[in-house]
Structure formats: structure tokens, C-alpha cells
Image 1 (tube, rainbow, N blue to C red):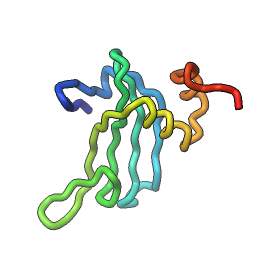
Image 2 (cartoon, rainbow, N blue to C red):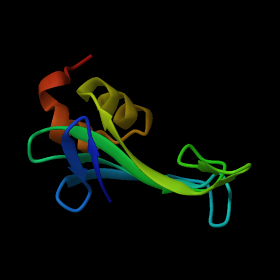
Image 3 (cartoon, helix red, strand yellow):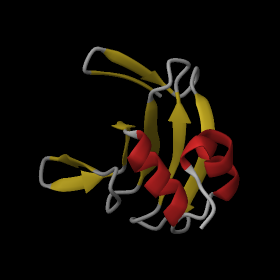
Length: 102
């Protein structure tokens, strides 16, 4: 998937996949799959796809269908995403400089 947002190219084919996540089950309208990526220039983004009742849905006429999207993220948003999904390895790999012992 590739999008240009605010003059910057976000491409899942050329960026590094940091982690993947999915919710729901096959044929569930709320089901979605997404990944967190970082570009070679250090820009973070979330890319995914989902059913007609997921956050990736798009409206067509008077109904919703499944869709996909790319959303740029800040480092803080990525850290929060990874923390809430207990992605310890990804956090330690990409944010060691921002993690400290409790």
C-alpha cells in the first residue's frame, strides 16, 4: 500500500515493518489487521485494512464497505500503541533511548 500525505510518501513495500496486530475473526465486520512501519527517513505510520464496521471502513452511498488506510504517527503515538499491545521487543529495539528502569 502506498499513499502520499502532506507531500511525503508512505509505502508499506519500502518501509520496515515493526509489528503487526489484528482484532476480530474472519468475516467479522469489525475485524481489522494493521502494522506499524518506519520509513528509511525515520517517519512512523500505521497501515491496515478492515471490514465495514472497522476503523478502516469507508462509506459508499448509504452503506459502509471494508477499506484500508495509512496514518502517519508521532514517536509518542507509536510508543503508546506498542505499550498498549505489550510489544516489548519492538519497544526495546526502536525506543531503548526513551525507556528507563522503574
